[in-house]
Image (cartoon, rainbow, N blue to C red; front, side, top):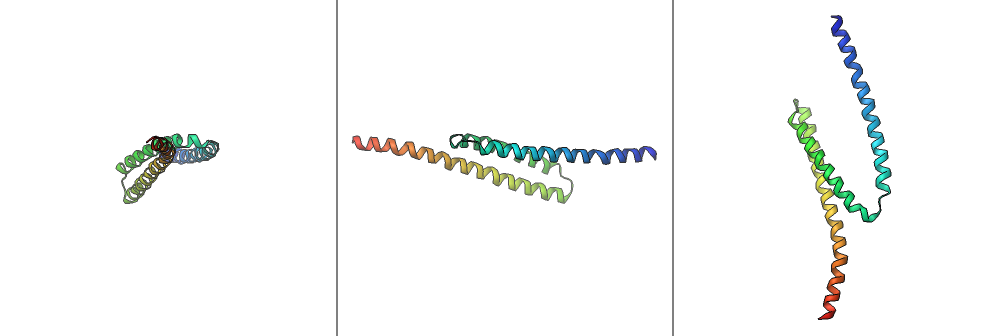
Length: 120
C-alpha cells in the first residue's frame, strides 16, 4: 500500500515538470521563430517556405502516427482534426510557394520574350 502511494506521488510530479518544460520550450520557440522570420529578406523567403513545407510534412506524419495509436474516440477525433489541419497547412504552403516562384518566372519570361519578339 505504501509503495502504491509513493508511486502515485512520484507520477503526479513528473507531468508537472514536463508541462513546465514543454511550455518553456514552446514560448522560446515562438520568440526565436518570430525573430528569425521577421529578419528574412524577400529573396530568401521562398527557400524558407520550402523548408517550412518540409517541416509541415513531418508534422502530418506525426499526426498520422498519433491517429494510429489512439484508443478512445476523443483521441481519434482530435488526431483526425490534426491530420486535416496539417494537410491544409502543408498544401497551402506549397500553393503559396508555387505562386511566389511563378512571380519570379514571370519577370524573367517577359524580358526574354520581348527581346526575341523584337528580333523577328
